[in-house]
Image 1 (spheres, rainbow, N blue to C red):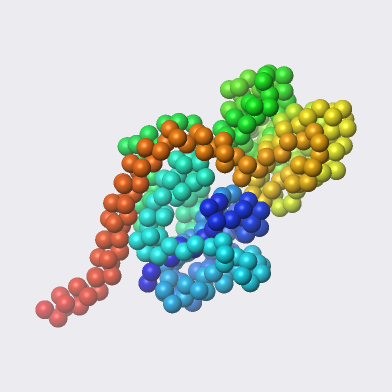
Image 2 (image 1 turned 90 degrees about the horizontal axis):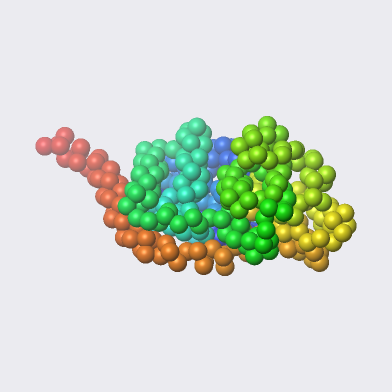
Length: 350
């Protein structure tokens, strides 16, 4: 048996491709069951976020090709399209990759803490779906412990760098005075919460929270002193918004070009700044074509993020050295497991 991690991320695929090949939260349990049911697969977990979708397995090495084929069928991708975006890690490389992901060293924003929570959620879903075994259970727990130690022993998280923070930095280039602006925030997840807190710190004039669950929107709105509404109410508030930020798990565009054109006419051509942090996209890319709209996606944040990462470079180097030793420690445990049957047999014979 081998540890095999197969996936794609912001390193290998565009935001459109990642969105098309991602799993929703509702799809994960059944997908896990199907993955675990493949011949030669003993344990399985799936991590699917806006920046990566990875499957973690304990499987027979000769069945590795079936993992890629399963991945292609699950997303109904054409033959040859998926393969050029995929990467594979095996055994020690798989362990080191898991530690790097959990610690935020493989993230678009190096050192960002959200990925650890997303990995814990992936672990919880796999546990509930009963697709884990002793190896992946220990790997996830080891990854969580090492990620915590990295944050304790280095300054990897000392500087506020995240996709939400980078988006606010771009917005500051557009708006000189946030107190006179209205922000429409679509979604109520952690990314929107982070962005909303950054905006409040900048003194935003008014915030509107739109979400599929009006209860969740109201909960976040009370916390931030904002106004809450449902997704169906977005057209009613779009013309008031100087800044639109969206991050949901919806399939399909929440704001199309025709809606945006109507809002612009009501605004009398007053410009609108839009940031789409969702994968798949929430905002129609054709909105970019409108003269008074400035639409950014998660991939457009790369340049801003790169500027903010310089302060973390030394800490990241320190963390990488730590991870190598912890990866070898886990590999030694794996080797001891492989040797256990032989040792028991020798003892019985003796």
